[in-house]
Image (cartoon, rainbow, N blue to C red; front, side, top):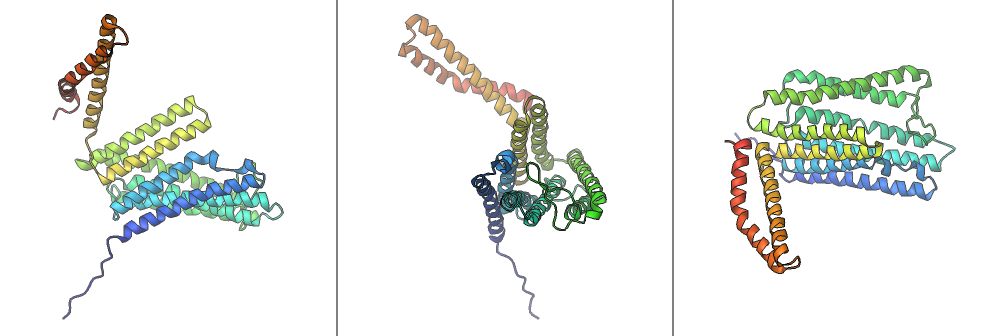
Length: 354
């Protein structure tokens, strides 16, 4: 009898695949800039989209980059690959949308090709909410919180397919103004009203599923213990920041600033997901807070002492005296280590008692 030989894939292939997909995403995002330049060359700068949607494209670049880092370091974990799907879908959506606007500007008599490109841009967007929901459902362990969450994943996929079919066969504009109305080349005018209603209902279902997926993090956090709980605290900190930034920007800023604030906050969530999954130097948040507070107090204390010595000796020796600067520097250097130990001990009694 001969033992069965099992083929083992080389360990380098996930790294190569991850960074190849990342390179495709970067090429796609760069192509958006080229398409915008073409629109300006043909005299239609009002159709350019990159500057308007730049924060959203930055989120796509961040998702692809974080996804490549995760997939190359944790190839068995699905979240890294989902982030790569997010980044690739963002790139395809931008390229297809930019192509549709360019075709509208250059082929004003026949908008069939523009309709096909616009349909591709619309359909390529839907992997983004699917990836986002699965990222929330699978972070940080890579599996669902429990088998009971499987129907939610099925509902999400079904609603996404229904929405895509409504866009494919529906007869409603696929591009935003100031572009002329562009429809899907596969549109069925007789089904325009029911398909539009069906698409809206399916989109509402996707929105509800997103809220439930976000709630799964709360359920997971309440059940988690040990390391998983620490991982989720990183994500909870980032999500709380996103919500806070979103509320403040929505109240105090205009739409452009709101988009930038939201985009930067989402990038923070992506980095938090990376830290939570990879667990590279994953410190307790209490320890981070205590160290930050201790160094902040130390900076204030020594900065105030330095200023006081400079001002005091400056009155006696003159404002431009180098002796006053030297004495202040020596005093701060002598006080640095004792002050740091005392402040850190006092802060640890509150934030890091163990």
